[in-house]
Image (cartoon, rainbow, N blue to C red; front, side, top):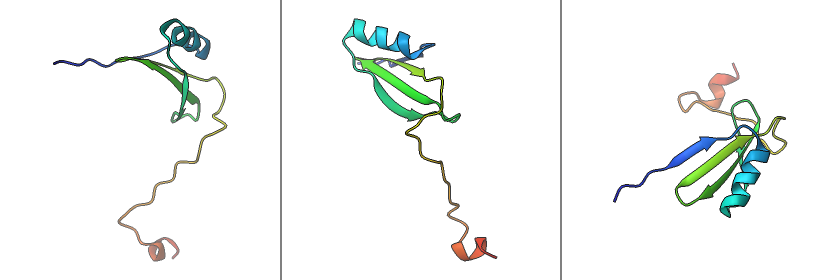
Length: 77
């Protein structure tokens, strides 16, 4: 059996809500993108539509990365 995943971005969250309503899907907040804009998505079967909000994501958390090669002592010299 071959499965295909169809993911496309719509231009506005309003378009996403209209698509979700027409297809009986629920719009969910997926998190922020790298520009800190909220990403919303709706899925029905193998089809997913996403849209980004125009303002910064109020639910976002700062991205923090710690190198596994550096020890805390080495970073405080």
